[in-house]
Image (cartoon, rainbow, N blue to C red; front, side):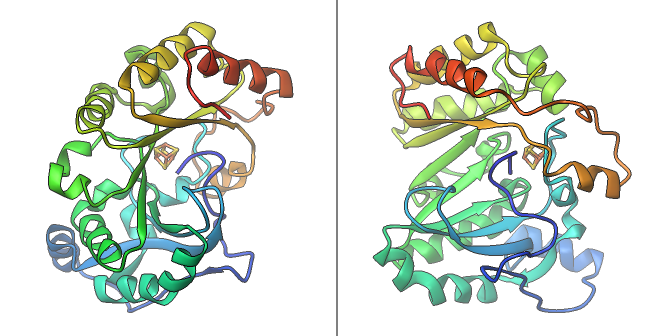
Length: 278
Ligand code: SF4
């Protein structure tokens, strides 16, 4: 989903695998699958992740996203058709396979992307299945489509990892190419429902390292009263080759990762509001 948390284009470790269930899926099948959640489109599964929620996680990476973050390091997940069609039954069987180990390691199942709520029915049914197995569930989301989930559906997601790209409207449009009112509304709704949340913020020199922006975001996050953890994710260039490979216009060509001092001072901004920031 964001700069530090997603998978490479090609599987590079034995812990990554691709599931493949079939050949080309027709347009009508795609539409019906999205409506029912009988099928989803996944970039890959990753096992053994220690950074996508508490404990050791099984992560399913969905395709499709409506944001166009300048720092996205997975632009290959923007389009639904870049994913592999996977039936709900197959995805559930993958969770089942790892369920005993995930529980033993105090971990769980995380759905990330792309933006998982672009396939909200598939997401909901996966979370229902994982919950029924007693597996901890988490979603990493940009929050824009949060209103697609009912309160009851949210109750089956144990943790929301909310990627907030910016706080102020104009800054959000600049960073992600889209407005953020629905994101703010979703965060407020989670707070009203007392649902636990981790907040993630990508620190990009010259783009998101704006003190007033971070101060306002930190104040907002602290006011929610449900943010258990804030993660400052330092920008890096690991996704650059994907932008090039896809022929996309990459604006951060010469941007360096933030310095250690810059990361520390961003963390301090959130700590100053009483938040657990890392
Ligand atoms: S929200 Fe979408 S565009 Fe932004 S970093 Fe995540 S996957 Fe990339």
